[in-house]
Image (cartoon, rainbow, N blue to C red; front, side, top):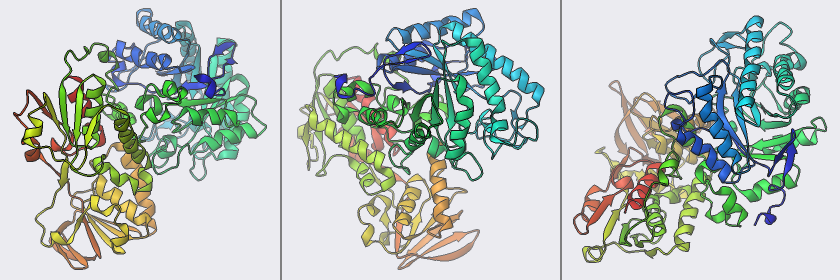
Length: 638
């Protein structure tokens, strides 16, 4: 089946190693890879092993820092020096090798003791550090090399040297951050001097048979930083002792993380042109990896075939669907669960305690799934509601051998996800909605559209899963009947006025404001709290704030914080702050103050069958992530 994509599945030899294909599983790590101990848990090993089992040619594990393991209470950190701590890391390499993949370890370029290239440079998007002295640079170089030697001794086939995204080591490379006045600052050659010393020292210590992949930002997209031409010059200088150059993009800050991890505000595969420019420069003679939102094997094969890159790195694609390679190779791309680029994986992995994926409820539970017993008895299951929660529940129940009927009172499936068809930056979510509907069409689930399930119907089933959703909350504001809910604005944009007031600055309200502003309308967001979008996941909020700032600068969006909406009149809204009232012109008023779970509607079906549960927004109005997760949980335990 791999002959349909001969380029991406072609083998290549790197540093003497036979690499079976051109797919690299880019570094990502579930929190349960560590529970405070300095070696991977079984869950952590399984996470990376699954990527090898799924068919990746190289599996990059994340990550090891120089200077030994640390415990910050959040991230996994592994000790590569103490023998009885290394045992599990050896197990990790062997279980990756079992499936014919090469395993590499990401070596993260963060200095100790708050050092950065210069005073004030941020550390991983956080507070500013202090300039690292040359004597500390020498100590770090020695520790860097010793760490790499220990990684090789464990059995890893290579390293990914993280020198991109404006992390402390990468700051040496950028003219924006490197303001040193010694031999390590100034010209491109000087700025590359220290990273080159590290790389050259590694090659001398490790020998020719260790794969060294170097990650840099081909363009930082920040004025005064690395641009494409400078990125090529940097790669030309650093390439001598590396085997692969990974051309990433952006910086580790709220403005440019959206380029590093492309979201819906950018088109598909927005960064691949950087890798192509590196290859076509005539100055780089090393293999090139491209990365950034690549979600299909067909696209990956074309990127290899047309000379854009030699390797394609995928991270979120494996998280959304671990079988992305197998399904794609079997010409089943329509069955690959699409990543919706929401960055919940990144945010949950960095700011929470359990890695989550909005579209894959199995993430973080990989080692548990093998313990789930098969459904012992085939049951007749009624799922009430055809939104994402109900569809996930129906698909999961059917896959376990149950006879499933899906009731939907509207004339189409998808629930509230249909709004995504109208907002261009929501195209990843629109693709996911289409995927869900396609999976239902291909399944054995009986679908009854335009049907509200009645008691007589439901009492004939063995189990009921209620996923009846929620409706917009209408507050007791005088004149509220003159407004429309946010969900009603999508698909009706031509009927809205030029001046729009959005009451409520949560994620939904701000997304609606951005959508309408992009259509040329003037939008005022009225928010009672101290800031907008406190309910949004961190990285998505950062991405949204960047776009909202652009709209503010053009006069398309105005934000009023700590204002309460007191009245809605014809063509205006009355808002109050600290006892002072203002009138805001508004041809159209959109309410986005929350959703009301349809608990009473869901409760109507209680007690009619032996098994009953409620899922999704009828429990509490939340995101797609919760709908999908609860749909899976409810069905997999039937």
